[in-house]
Length: 289
Image (cartoon, rainbow, N blue to C red; front, side, top):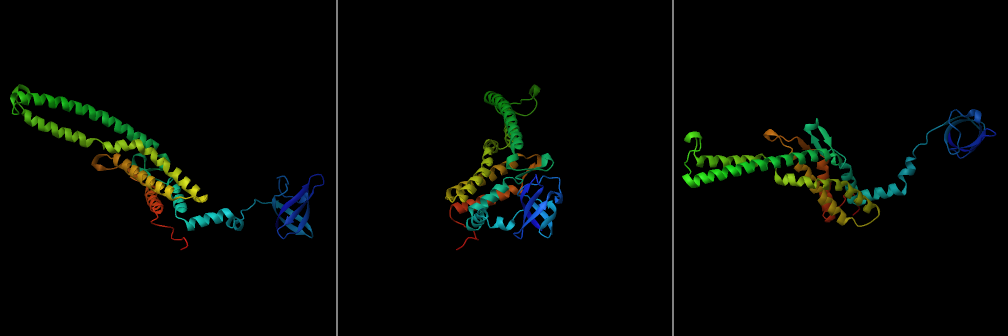
């Protein structure tokens, strides 16, 4: 039988157990089958010999599933999950924030959540800064060469040979080649807009914060329409920023070293749902009509 120790007197070595049948049974310390001290309230398993408890063993207290499922908090959570859309989708958005948002081929296939993007963003920012400095140096060199060619063309014409001792291509041909080289330099640079958007990557960290805020508002019964719309918009922006990361991390033949993880797609879907919910376009299909 199972029960709980109602009380124990060390001086006499005796105590009382209340059984799961509601009856009380006396016991002696000699029947205690554990090195743990005997304390009131401890759950125990014992046998009966008449009205005495014998062979008493302490047991770990179990979780009362029935009591838990009928608690007011669980009932309220169940009501919010089936009666509203913002509450369950906000929980999904919060969970998605710790799922793999980016898969990095350069890091042995490592998956990174929103909270682990710092090293990748820093690395791409440094690469973009270095490329920008290199491009500025190349552009300056191209500008100087173009000015020299323009002076030659202005003074002696575009057919003037520019090679050593008067051999080689003409100034006009060299100017065309220079323009083509300028185009190649511009094409080799990462998108200026994409590099600029790296400075807004901090917005992705606001996604789980807004999801928590939305859960809190739902729990307290406050209006969530504006918060749902804001969370939806921010989630879509976060997805766009993640996609921008994959576009920036490209190598030869257009191969991206970063790919979107399933967490990013869940963020997008949950954000769209929250946005539509905030606009009043959709509602929880489980909600009562």
